[in-house]
Image (cartoon, rainbow, N blue to C red):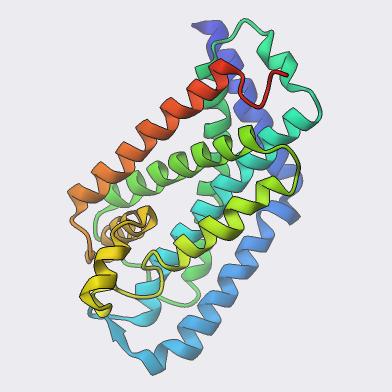
Length: 255
């Protein structure tokens, strides 16, 4: 077990050093982007909208914007890092090492979680310049953001496994992740939608994460918290099992 712990820690430290070394590409851009969201949607458009779910519009969108940054960065870190490992043929060094595949998977997921939480923390600090931050339930807030980072780190790993060129690692974030994020209740409550579209929105997994995190901060949610936890944990179990299956089979890795 000591050997496995060293291997896990080595991967995590490597991943953290990787995104910290290029912080101008990994940490600064999301901070600037979220600041623009705060200014445009919160300060400029927010006063025209008024309140939503009993809160100022700025207060309402802050949890969603924090989650957006966590989702995109935890996903991006793993997909880019693991695909680079494949592209440079460095993956062989891991495959021949006396380390179980689940340790390798956990190491890369932990690296993605570290970047997601780091960017989320930066965005949270930036939000304090625009609004007072409420904390309704810190346990829910912390657990949901960690689980979400784990889930999308696993999603990034699966994308990296199937990617065959660098263009492939941008297809899912562009055509799947971004639309789901914008339609996941970041900027609105689904209670504003017609009944049919409320039902359709329930098929969006990001809706559960955003609302659960919003509950942790503001105490309001369009989704029951128990349902949100069940959905997130269920997706994590499915994606982790699938990721480990792909790694054991060598899909996209062994030629």
